[in-house]
Image (cartoon, rainbow, N blue to C red; front, side):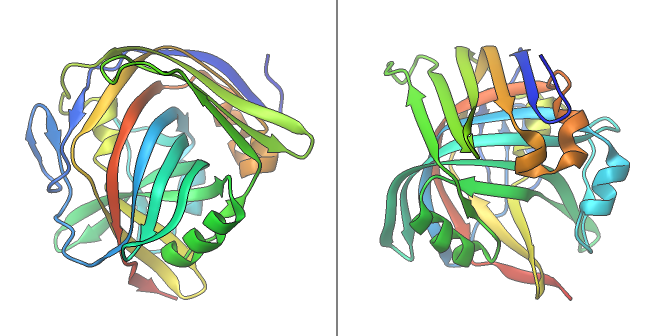
Length: 277
């Protein structure tokens, strides 16, 4: 069932990718994608776990209007994409000091590239970002130089061995109504093919934000990602209230792909101003 205000769909993902090693911006082999080493002092560290991405094709003309100055939408085979991202954030630390132990996060991101030294840097730009706890929203807003909002959330996950794909449910409350994502894992994907959808999405290692001073870039550093195929994915989301009416059409369609990860340790560098106002 679909409406102008809610994205609601079932999806099956059969992507063929598995482990991701982020070291540089080039693809070094069939199974690794990378980011530049994070030489800057980490702004925060955390563990991202039970991470779900539901990916949709979107109107690239719309995204060109939204993307901040100095960036441009990065396209996959000529199409622009946005992702509904849900994850569990554990052991959030700022410069080594504990901030928050465990909370859920939901957001909508798009994929961008930044012309840089004759080539490109690849990253994501959050259109909206919500977290479960008020203190986490306050801290993350300051750490990332962007707006992070608090929203009531719940998370349920099956307790299975680490070599088994989890079943995951995220819920978040919009006004008086609970929205949700339900994911049933299937199997670990065996390798990452250059040019695949997962390769495209997960190679975007930089994080871009915008505030009154301009466009900022941070580098996300992580070891290998373990990616799981998805047998079934369902979501019910008040897209208009959470992210804006301009995304209702894209998120009412069947997703282009869905996948999940058990997660990994991550660190995010201090934001660097790359495009002043």
